[in-house]
Length: 345
Image (cartoon, rainbow, N blue to C red):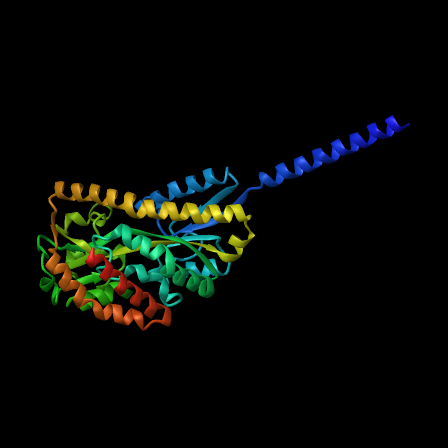
């Protein structure tokens, strides 16, 4: 009798253990599928960089995270995408914080003119770690219900000159019709003495043809990807600023993920953001630089003296930004202190 009961209990325990094992296996294999919108189209160099990010996440989570991609703002219009993320229409968003300055002015701090020239790596670390990171992170959390995962310092926005006009001195920008995308870019163009003209990217080529603009503030890759080299025969670097891409996740979505996946997203995004900023984009720009010269584009580099002149001229842009919020003022204060450290090295 005792032996019979022992066998029965042993069987029940075995069954119970199997159920627990199956339950644990089912939990471990649960797939989390995220709706991921990117404002970049599939041919854009930044979209291509995101292919690596996606592979890194899938590998680091052992396939537990999958993505449904919506490139070129297919689900929510670009200018409304951060609001769409806030309301949970999408789970993740890759876009530029400059589009949402009115919603989170602290977000496009990394667009400040003439900051990252020659300091790309150290500037990325300055923005993505420590007090600066915390200010930006908390601003997105509070105002957009979004977890800010990283940003990427992408293409340097230099000056593409129409025809063969070379802009090797800041004084040569005075009075010219200079295309700028709006926001900080337009204010920067005005501070440098140019007459800013706001034109959508799709309208730039005919504007160059007609002479509606004399020059553009635009990344060098535009010479190739948008065929601007056919009309714009000069490129001046370094960029007036670096256009930046940001990566966010809806806070509710983030909190619904297991803790280990949350940590994985933060670590992978950080590592990928640094790689894209300091390896991928500089390498891509170097390739474009070589390509442009082969196509007959004259590439010039501003002297250190000219860069210093430009930095002084754009201080009103910094002052304007500092008045956007108390947090923006703190960011500018931290940046000015940081730049002094760079100069002393």
